[in-house]
Amino acid sequence: MLGSIYSGFSFSAARTGQATTPGVAQSCATGNCTFPPFQSLAVCSGCKDITSLLTITCFNTTTDDPVEKVLTVCQNSLPNGLNLNVIPPPRDASFVAGSGYLSPVTMPPYGYTVLNFSILRRPVADFETGADQNVSAFECFLYWCVNSYRSKIENGQLEENIFDSWHSISMNGRWNDKYSAATLIPPALNKSEPNSRFYVSPRSTYSLSVWLADRFSFSNSYLDDSSNSSAISSSIGDMQQLFLGRDPTYIFSSLARSITSHMRSISPEDQVPVVLNVSSNGPDMLDWTPVSLANGTAHYLEVYIAVRWAWLAFPAALILLTAIFLSLTIASSARSDTPAWKCSPLPLLFHGLDQQAEKKDSATALREVYQMEQLASEMQVQLKDEDRYLRLERSDTPGKALA
Image (cartoon, rainbow, N blue to C red; front, side):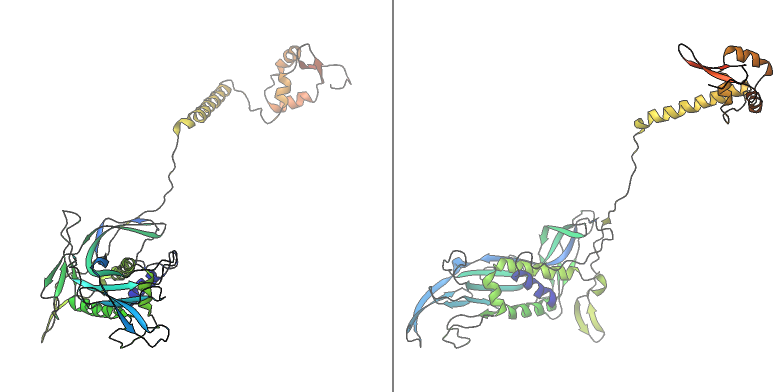
């Protein structure tokens, strides 16, 4: 918890892009997950500008400065007793005072709060315009709440949206009792499901409140009664500097997010039940069920093959017709008892002979390749140029070369 608080301070002090709030523990094996809406215990914040409630009283005081023996000091006061004495411009000094122990000036609408904080501040002259700053007053609160989330993880990055918040608390006992329980029962997100219950230990809340109130109580007010000093404090602590440089609303919002992230990252096994009473028989624990994890759905990419059957119609028809033609050729060759001549080009050459040669050799019934090879060794042919085409013609002239 302590680390998450300081982390919230660090994020408040850093400029955009220099720091990030701690993330909520998550697990998504594919890097892309979605979650149904869910509720979680959280710390919420709220701030209000109450500068209009300031009371300003100015007076003169003597100093040891030989040049400025009389100094005008203005006291800025809130109705709850927080004061800040400042020296009017053009004195170059920053003044800030805050308290986490004083009563709230306005009644917070959040019920039981973790921290009530009042602050008065007057930063040094504006860095951009050079104009003198007036004293401003804010009142901020931290309080228990139940947030409703819509979450998803895209490319390994968690994205969340708070679409509802509930802060009504019912007490089992009194808030300052040693053993009591605070219960938050928000409306159910789904009417068919029971209401969620979240329990908070007031004792733990008190410890957290005191620790935060100590850190949020500071002052460098001029003529501060607590220090009996008649000079301006030369040192400004880290917390004072934080509130001088940042809007309190932004600081408390960052602090609330950081504490909430820490609580949401606590596993069910590490959650501790609230102790209602301690007797000789041991501690009386609250009958409760640990808050379970929010389970979602993991999404992953899968390859799908889409077939455009219309584009396959032409090649499929071509293959089919080719198969039919081949089948008919085989059947025709089988019926005519045609030998397989594809292993030799001689049948093609014999087919191209003139009709006279074909008739002369028809008696030999040339059907086999070996018969054609035997006859070809005894035959002479020549290539003749006809009017329209070339053809082979048998030649009986001895010793005449083939053309």
